Length: 192
Image (cartoon, rainbow, N blue to C red; front, top):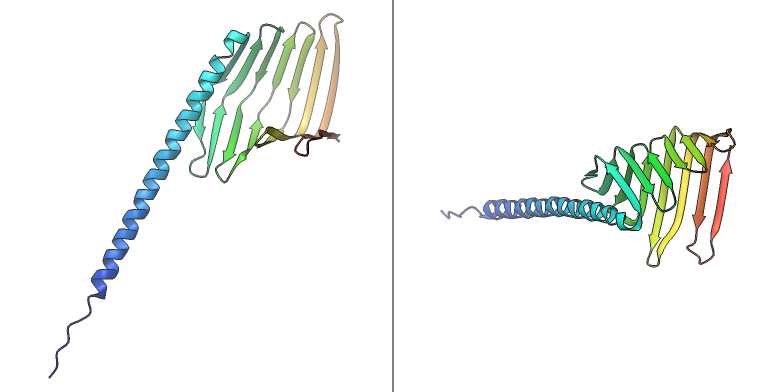
């Protein structure tokens, strides 16, 4: 009678499965840590860039800045944005805003903003409101290539303090673009 030993394939496949699972867990931990380091560096660089504008007479504040978007994008959210240009006497306030970059398409920035926006100067005040406002900015090797802005439920009111007059405008849909990717600047605006 011939007795054969059972094959040890069970131990080998179990060991391969453990090694594969360990490698995947290590990769996931490295990706997670790398994403958080990148988000922290971008947030820090943005804050220092905004602070560096003071010497140019421009003060920019992103209230309650938070980064997010894990795992496949990186986003920055501000509960409000304010910008004051002392040199030109212009002040701007914008509601909550978010900018998002997909890690799969890092040359395109998508943003959305909640109104209202107020732009104030000695020449007047512009107040804009909307239901939805989105913008997309595409970058190439030589810088910005294209900008697209879309809004629904747009309302604008301009007040001239010197004349005491006001101009109002409305559009159910607004779309505008500027594209310089081909070397020539193409622009367009549509309003309904």
